[in-house]
Image (cartoon, rainbow, N blue to C red; front, side, top):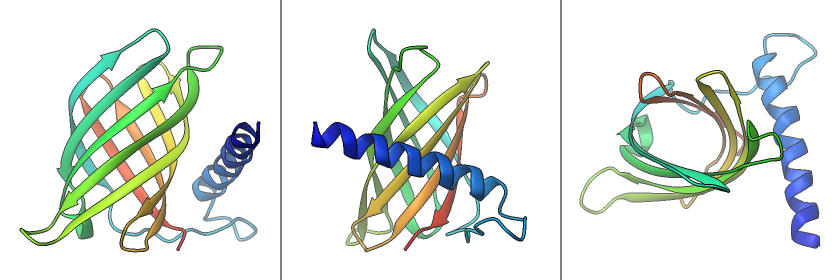
Length: 148
């Protein structure tokens, strides 16, 4: 029960943050700073299921290096939205590897999926990632905003 309440609160906060991030150019909106330029990742697999879909991707992501990521999308009642979670690893060199975990929400409009996740990176970074998955092009565009 407590876990479900926390998920609902987190989901509501993500929706508010994602709308204000998109409207950050308004003087009354919350202006979020980009962590790094948007990164394009290549989708390496999509596994469809009755209750969830998993997506894996890889690509270069600025300060995090070569990144491998897995997104788990749980379906909501409509089938076009739901919760998201997952993990990522960023490799800089033989000794420097970042680990990130995230939770959030996703929605689909036509062939485009949008994920909004709060990401905790083991170096202390906390990001709001807004990910756009173009299912026709097999690419994910990741916009990372600084939360901490």
